[in-house]
Image (cartoon, rainbow, N blue to C red; front, side):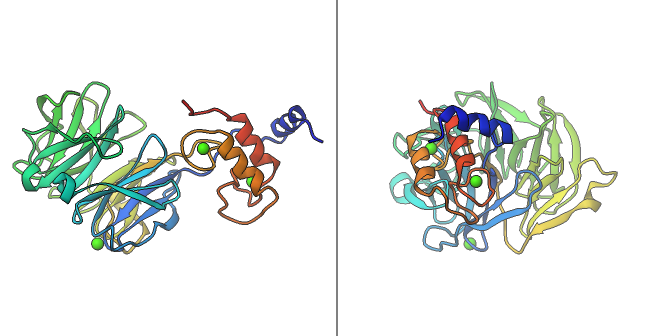
Length: 340
Ligand SMILES: [Ca+2]
Ligand SMILES: [Ca+2]
Ligand SMILES: [Ca+2]
């Protein structure tokens, strides 16, 4: 029998520790009513059908947002509902819909401190941000004024930014209790959609109406760059390789922000489709079942398929197409991580 200490020493020696399953970017596709997965390293396609085409649940899936428990909430702008999936893309339940919650024409979402925030564009709750517990209970109006067809919500340490599509289509800034501060990010943009953060701390804003493109602002809201790479982008995200991934009605694309003319560097990674917001789904090392906690459930999963081989096994934590002691070590070394 191999003692645990021997196994761990072996693991250190062959350098298997600390490797994680590949995290991925979630991007909904309105054309095919599905959610696709892409590499956060270079933007390459991982799985076109991470959440497969589902015309019952989806008509216009807008935003796929990971939760702190490893599930994924997907807002649908036309079916007016928020659906919850597990970390493998399997449907769990619908946590809110128009019948129970009057959420009509919903767009972007955000999660902060155990609460879900959702923008609403039509109906009795038009121009509000609704707030829920993460299971869909406890609904309340969080912001009910100073919004004009709100699209995306971006929380920062001391404030929040909300993009709006009309009258005027600008970004507005609020405090963390929803009190209005004012416009943010200049007035030349039109119809800003998703807001994300670059590694340098600047924010990328995908602006859907002319002058459309990807805008970059510093933390104070001063524009530092404009990338004329698309006539209707919905989201932009800085990849680990330094390129910027973005979405529009024609595909998932990348450009090089450091090139002399970034617009000349646009390449389509995946098409056709009509692609929306971009979110990172991170897999914690050792978390086989993707519930953000490494415990005996993950250990058992590895033990039960120990010795199996094949591609795409969730128990194959180091991605070498075999479930063996290397994967077991990843679970053991991270045991307890993320658990409350
Ligand atoms: Ca559709
Ligand atoms: Ca787990
Ligand atoms: Ca393996």
